[in-house]
Length: 340
Image 1 (cartoon, rainbow, N blue to C red):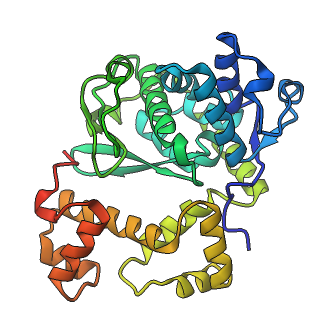
Image 2: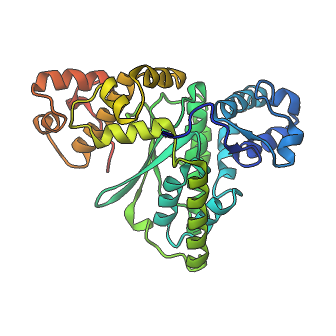
């Protein structure tokens, strides 16, 4: 049973997203041999369109590029080039989206082809659209680089599709960096750091403006071709994506390593080993899913402590508050506004 791609699954065409980072480094005089050290790749194979690499090889490449470029704007410049990209039919689905909403939905649907290391998840309420990002396969020290690049990519794509700069707002789950001016230049000034989510938001009104230059027919054909491509790979997303989705869908039922392993058709030891390979463990993933459900219930649905505790099947509100503090580092009353 194939659950999803893993950190060592070699499926990412090196001449797609990785080549954009390689070209950026080469344009700044970085030697290709030093850039590709430890990746198992050769530039000649990349240039001929033959090479495929795994997420962990891509992360190694990112680490090399960060070290060799040693520039605060590297992730942002990389991000500006990422979307819609030149990745075949998947990129055509974005280019021919009839609205920004459709483009974001396709980005989410074809994330394995368009954003294989960092997963975008679209959430809507009555007034806002939220795009939050999760690690797809254990990216370690590259997470901040990827957060910067992926958010910049969506900002650049939305500006291209909408022919205007949109009023995105940003939350980051890490501390304010010393190079904050790069955020101002590439993302704007609506920034919040030390947040509970890495997320960007936009008023819903901007999602549904029609794009007269888009071809609905071409977009539909590209969408079908992209679905066929994913079917040939045998999965839609990463192993960690599938686990997150399963945990969220079953968050109100008793969940433990053994039960989830059974649902995934593997032994508990195998599931534990797969999680260790991705630099995580079962409790961390379960806490992440519970945290995100709790945040949604508090800040979108307007639930109180007792209601959230009951939804998550905590019989004791005190125990829930203790767990929430473990997930977030704060009690519910200290939660800053994320949504809205």
